[in-house]
Image (cartoon, rainbow, N blue to C red; front, side, top):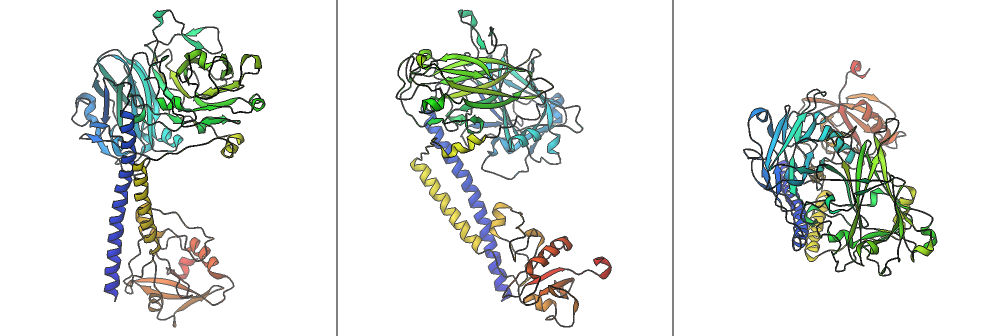
Amino acid sequence: MRSIMKNSSNKCLSFQKHLVVILQAFKLFVISAIFTDAIIKAAQSVPFIPQDAITIDCGSSRNNTAFDLRSWSGDVNSSFFPIQGRNEASFASAVVWSYTLEEDPVPYGTARLSHSEFTYTIPVSTPGPKFIRFHFYSDVYQYFDPSKAVFSVKVGRFTLLSNFSVFLSAHARGRKGIVKEFYVPIEKSIVNITFTPESSVSEAFVLINGIEVVSTPADLYFRDYNDGKHGHVLVGQDSFYYLENDTSLETMYRINIGGKEVTPAEDTGIFRRWERDNIYLTIPGQSLVAANFISPHKFTAIPDYIAPVSVYETARTMGNDKQMNKKYNLTWEFPVDSGFYYMLRLHFCEILAEINNTGDRCFLIFISNETAEQEADVIYWSGGKYVPYFRDYVIAMFGQNGENILNLSLALEANPDDSLTMYSDAILNGAEIFKLNNSGGSLAGPDSDLSPQVPQPTEQHVMQKHGRTTITVTFSGKDFGVLFLFIICLLILRACCKVRKMKNLSGSSEETICRDLFHSRTPVSKQSAGVSSLPSDLCRNFSLAEIPAATNNFEDNSIGVGGFGHEYKGKINGGVTMVAVKRLKPRSSQGVQRVQDRDQMNLATSYADCREEANEPSRVGPFLSSREKT
């Protein structure tokens, strides 16, 4: 009988392990299918094809394909990473990680690490501005302490990162995988990227998982001021800021206002990511989201690679209540480093049916409480309805009294003068915020190892969930198929979890599919009567038959008595291990809960636990001598 039970248990555990593998593979399938569908749609109308779209999978010895179908080249024995000089001290390592749906194993599955300085040498087709993106994954790599990954990064004469901590930056964002994006003017046909461990930190090392170098149109963010046009509006000052191609930028925020997240595969060909605006919206008021508006957009005022069409298809407005709109400013807040100038690019497109002519909607724009526009009229700027447009602004953010982090606010105000506008309202479709390098060519903030925290939503923001904002979700036929398969697997998992307790007369500990899949060691609440809150991997379950056998049927071996009941001496594991067994007496005045609470404290080092069957609760723990008990 025992042999049959053991074989049955082994078969079940084998099935559980196979199901774990199947579900993990299914996770990859789901993400790949979703990304593939998005890529196919986006690839049908990519406005810009970069000459250089270099992706390096650091620490990998072969080429790999990411979920979004982009191919990444391994840097081991590649031309990007010549093994000579100080580069020889670096080495490749696989991450010791727990796979999640949030991160792609390409490039986050491997990394290059070093206690010494090293340099990537990346040839490019032509000089000019490039997006340079660094991918970091904060986790354990061999014997390296993740908190010691502190270093600086330089590209040419620009310091992009200094005293940068991967661990702290990831912790501030609440996720292990992070991306730092920079827009850098490259003057030669080679990009040299140098990583240097922080000398002030003991045992500091460099950690890098992935690098991107992507060409962009020359006029994407830089302007040619030789055409006689003015520079960028310098907010709060009666002057202009001339942002030319000798300046490096760090992307702080890129927001799709009122719309969904736009993935790099859905961008205009230069692989930017656009976030949703919800967490930055601190004063939503009665704002409305104009969602999923589809109309042929006319890119007659700006090039079509400036931002994806999806950014201009959605927007946030103040609402339909004219009087209410005059009582608040629609406001977003973005924490930034003190001591730098920042460029804001605001994206506009009039997409509402009632707005058709110049003067229909005229509003005010404030940046950090300074007036940026007194008469913002999108149709006047763009030349017509459904015509995308953008406006650039520069503002100085210098704190006082040693402030390192400041809030850069963006606010829209309905025009208080009814004679200047038909509708007391405002609109915004998208926003980008960039840090500009200082006079020393550095973008490193005063505390660059600590990433800015997202502002907490105000009470108004929480109430907005019950307001007039709407969200539309659409699925394709392929998405429904993927969702259906995922639900089937969840039902199988749920059924297996219900069959989690199995009798094992041989004395081996139990395993459950739930633990295999999720590696959960979360203790159960003490208030759950009858359930041990000791970690499952420190416990063992005993059948009702094993308890009497271990204690000689509770005869002549009592070693104590209390309000809970008698305590008996017993032996398990073939008589090798001595234990103490507590037996709950009928209608005990103290009950199961007290003995559980007491044993959680007194038997914290116990490797054994009990199982209650047939109204015969017992408790098994290590046998202690009278000296050990005291």
